[in-house]
Length: 97
Image (cartoon, rainbow, N blue to C red; front, top):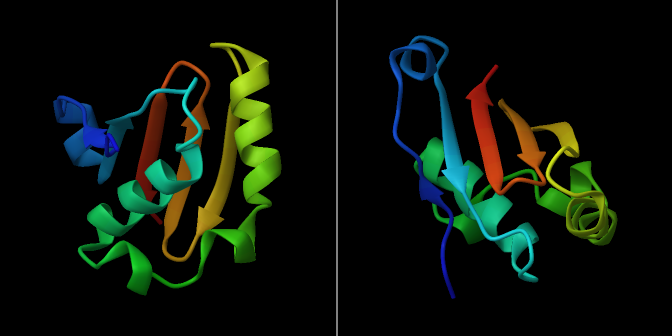
């Protein structure tokens, strides 16, 4: 399984305390990739991160929206102390609140 990986960090990314991760939107691992990205940002194991993804967004709806919406679609939500934006082009942006 390919894990979400941090993209190159720019100065603007560092100043806003956000990181962009890459993922393959055509694969059925979007939910796992989001959880891994947020937990990496938080510095905790994915299985120990609270709140759980399903507590803040419907995982099936998130996957379906990203997979069927094309490159221009994006879904944003709050997950614990992080703002998360998942983009159809294969990016997950995680920013500290």
